[in-house]
Image (cartoon, rainbow, N blue to C red; front, side, top):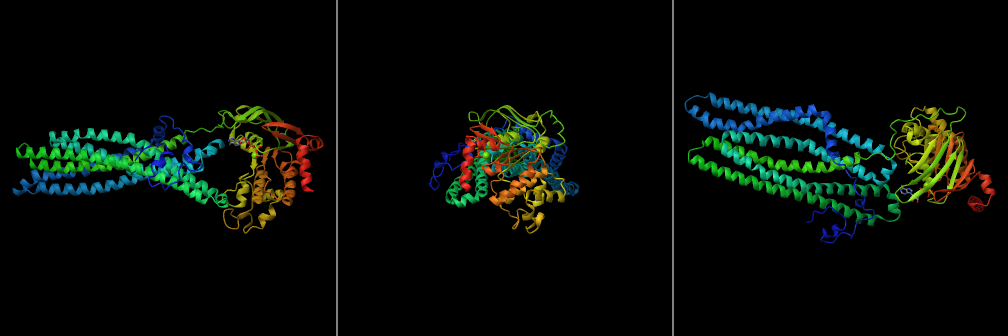
Length: 622
Ligand SMILES: Nc1ncnc2c1ncn2[C@@H]1O[C@H](COP(=O)(O)OP(=O)(O)OP(=O)(O)O)[C@@H](O)[C@H]1O
Ligand SMILES: [Mg+2]
């Protein structure tokens, strides 16, 4: 089997039965490279996670140390019993044997109690680390800019905070205990062997060198394998999440079979990676046992020879053999540790890569205050000053763009698909920063505003009108969390949403994720409007926010919009020309440029593009 990590074409070779479709699945998650992890970021993350718990880690390790000493004392007591206790017993001196018996009992019980104490302490450390880590991933991902989320799918984020965090859990809960146990056993047993007999001890210690080399070899080989495995499971989750999120188009366009095939490829790829990891581990186990068995055989043969020639006591050889068995027992446990270590290291590296991402629209170091708003109207002036913008290098969407919208003006933006209208809106809401130039709110660069102030000042309502799980009332209150129920109802009434909300099973308390709480796309848009009205921003951006409303509904919304937009600065992007008529000013955009700019009446009366569009629309109504 190949241990390649370049997924894709290699898959065909790995599938001798040929049961898989050829090539990579559509929208292959492996096409998107994982985020690069800066050097040292993984270690820094681990240190920052465990650092605050340092004292508890030390105490837990000490408990484990004492526990190991108690466990290791057993064979020593046996040696003492054979070499001193039994001869004394023959001379009717029962003291030494009784002492050994009591000592053995104390060590056994003590080891058990300490083990329990350690497991408890370790479990709590573990819990704190994982809580911290998962919280960090969530907070960080949430703070990252929209542009990041458009690249990194939610499925991969889920994978990072589930399977990757889980593999760290495995390392911390079992792996770490294994490691401490193994290292302590190695050290204490080696010392004991050296103390019992220098020659036998020396062979044991010498056998550690090939073991060490083996571990190094395993680690260097396994890190790629485990990283590939972590990517592979992320691929499975991404496909799962994407398919289920898009279940309507999936079923509408009968994508099930194609999806099944894609999923089979990803699923199988993950299993292959899993197999690679197991195989890597098996190689290590076989190698380490070989080293161990060779060393044991050498020691026993040599020990027997020395007993026969009278230079070694039989009791010492018996104790040495008992210790030897114990010395190499931990090797398999070391393999378990290495397994969880590699897996966690690969996961932690991916998490560190995610956490190292910085928001493309960073919070300013020294935020500026907006000037106090004019008291008669809530609106603020908006200006695009020499703005250029590209999502990716090369494809400029807005070539040098200048625009000033006076406070309180309602501007309608129309233009063909892909003209850059939504891009304009996203820049104004600072989901992106311009590649060049500035976007200003009352003369202040958006980049200088604290995010909280910016979000209070500029609100964007989009076509999706997303509802969060919770009640209708809670969904409206997102606009202003401290709003009273009366204010929420007033906002809904002003929008014309009160009637349909009251007709829901539980009215405003209806849960939008439960049966009966499911509302239509147009109703969702009304809720989103009410939310925006309640938020009462200085600048309101509506991007196709009325697109799901039917014509009678739209009339009501037209009135509602008058209410919402009154006094505010507003940018309304609409395909429907009826919506445009309420604007003070109309901008026609093509290829990222404004090609017409005037009042609705002025443009309709003219000979430009808007006049043509408007005529066609009028005719379609007739
Ligand atoms: N996230 C993105 N990454 C890369 N390119 C994008 C992204 N979003 C939009 N674009 C590109 O930018 C251009 C302008 O898109 P924009 O969404 O602003 O158009 P629009 O005028 O709102 O169109 P529509 O009327 O269809 O909503 C398009 O060519 C589009 O392909
Ligand atoms: Mg758009």
